[in-house]
Amino acid sequence: MMDVVHIVIVGIALISSIAAVRAKDLVISVIFLSLTGLVVSLEFYMLQAPDVSMAEASIGAALTTAIYMLVIKKTERYEK
Image (cartoon, rainbow, N blue to C red; front, side, top):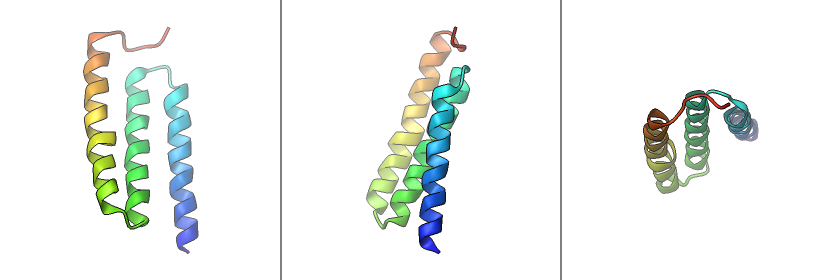
């Protein structure tokens, strides 16, 4: 049962990563990137690495997303 859950989590991370790369709107791309970080954080937690999970959630998903949003605000939102 847990193997299926791990496969689903990795699948969601893979799909959101591909969506982040293919998105033309940079804000949508950052949202998908944040989703990838949160899903990877969940996978780390399920692999019994809560310290790595918390670091990924706080830095990988939250702080990085905030920095990207600030940069997008100062530049163009859509890819040409």
